[in-house]
Length: 212
View 1 (cartoon, rainbow, N blue to C red):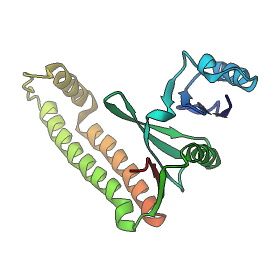
View 2 (view 1 turned 90 degrees about the horizontal axis):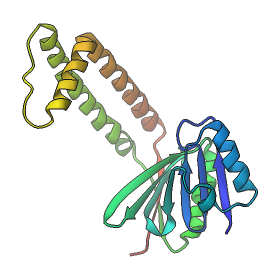
View 3 (view 1 turned 90 degrees about the vertical axis):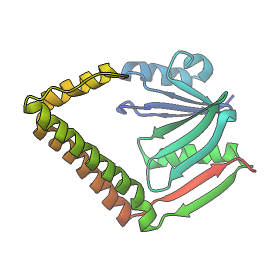
């Protein structure tokens, strides 16, 4: 069984990605463990043996959709486990690695329908714009709650998820109204940055799906 390896020892997530004829393996070992695992894989040991206790495995037969933006360095894998649907986003150290991984997946699913769409500016910014509005709304509501807590008003905590509500109240008390605005503002700034990037250079998205 042949396999391809992509390994980035400096990656925070998905440092080791292995693709075989049947399975995608994704693991995040330490630098020492990663070097040892890669050495064993390079020596020809089967990935199912080397990575049996590491990370996640996604059988190619379980994939329901493969999707990536040609201008990014990540790829989304949608798959089904029994009756449950799930997805996995894999980010590679370089776009060239992602392209090589996508090309091998496309070759393995040669009978799948491929569709490439260049987004309009409106479609490109729609997602970040909606998320930004959501962040702004939640930030304002949390700010109001933090102001009340800072003023000495006791929060009424009861019903379902009381523990979560109590932890949220404690967090708001610790962060304070100004802290809520700072955190929310940073999230909004990051969202605006992404929105600007997508508006200036809209995605070109390729999607692979099984034939209908």
